[in-house]
Length: 89
Image 1 (cartoon, rainbow, N blue to C red):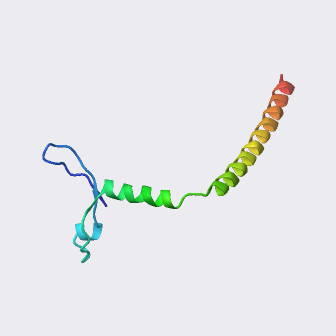
Image 2: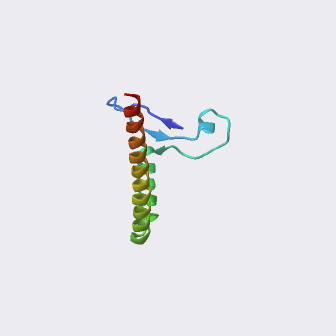
Image 3: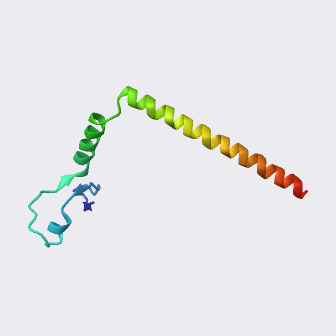
């Protein structure tokens, strides 16, 4: 769980603790960890597990195709709706 206590100057800081330990429901002995430290580890993990340039190109191409298809179907739907509107007028 995340805790947000205040320091001596009244500023808040965040850290994670074991909820079981906090509520005295487990025998967890893990220390609290500052949120900033966790965020740094997450960034490091993302940086080391990113896509290769080739994978990024493939994903980009696929997304372009999907968005082109969505745009085309939106255009078709718009044309149909405009025709229906004109027929009612």
